Image (cartoon, rainbow, N blue to C red):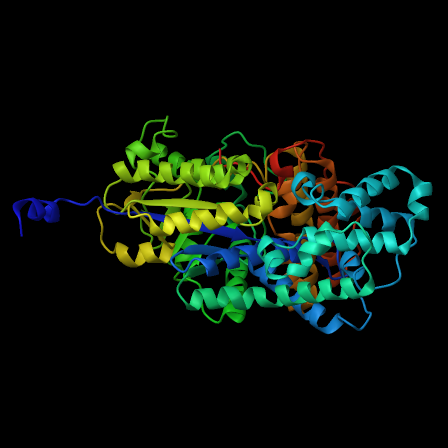
Length: 581
């Protein structure tokens, strides 16, 4: 061996930088058990478009690794839709979803408000990417907008119009990988003529097969070690607020809180969500998850220590939660944001003092770039920019560095061409082969950690979420606090009824309470959100609360007839996503 080759062999090699991509999949409970129907269609639509595509991209790149987090209440809804589709196709019976029913039923509602709601639902799509590219859908959507303003036109739209509109709508919500797997779909998307019953039936069978296959596909990816599946507590509650409403003041000292001093029996309710969430996850995937993405990355010191009781190996939150916690401990300057790559404080795992669980914190810049910035870029340029930032971090990162990228796995892709097909395909392929980057999972990092100098230690944790490092998205203004007040009033009344009549304490009642404790309702409350979405979610929230009273044999109070929030803003991505800072 020459001296030159020997020196090359002995030259120090830069350590690889661990990169974890974590996609969070969640929807609240859209099924109104009192009415026996799905009020909003987002579960099966995202199943068709986003859960299918993400699985397909991971299947297509054997070297890729990712974490996919499922909220258990979403798993139940996917399984329920799968069963409804399997048993209902060909029987001319309702699926419990009025727009999905139009693919099979020959009878179209005649009531004006029911017709308006179908039109409103079918217009809920990002028009530049999901309506305008398809000739027939674009023309039918224009007619729908006109009919919403013209009662006479609304009344004269015939059955064929509604069936064609619903068919176009479902075609637009198919994932790009689904379209490519079914060549006939490409022809249907380009047509400018009506769809007959045979086409609608064939489309319905595609929908059935894709929804039915989703959970088995992810289970197989997990069994192959290509995906780590993690969970969120059952109905996606903000755990720190259930444990202690005053935890909101750790990051927002002057925040106004609801009238009640705390959430009744909060720790027991949090434990119920964790335990029920673990049960549902194991039922659908056949194993117990090692990690937990807490709802909206919401953590507090009490929440972390409670998760320790369930032998969870890792959890995660937002960059600003870490920054606030380090600043409170005097470990960084107050201007802790913006210099994470150079200082190294963000890109490593942490542990809370007297706790065992490993903590990871979201890189807001990289995560938000995928969620909000790259959709208008050429896919190769976007992935190149993303990889370039990672390589810059790798150049200054010490041994054991890990970059955590966490974002909504559902709502970003409708703003990308072809549902993000080219971006995601290139992202996985380039990250998987980059010699400086190690695409892995949180559990991979935990298994290698052991006693290590690169792990940070936190004497305390300033409570907050991945959104701004606070709980301001869920508590603190009039509308959000009113949402909490109505929930606490309901839970207090129900618990008193149960104390007097223990037989009322059924699994259905506890599950309904959990649905009402989900984070999505207060997420939407506030003037900064679009009025249509606020109305959808606040009405459904009041319906869920009313059902809780009914299950406890109580009269529904008049207060639930009052609107909680009206909205009126125009946030990015329609309010479905937020930036970390």
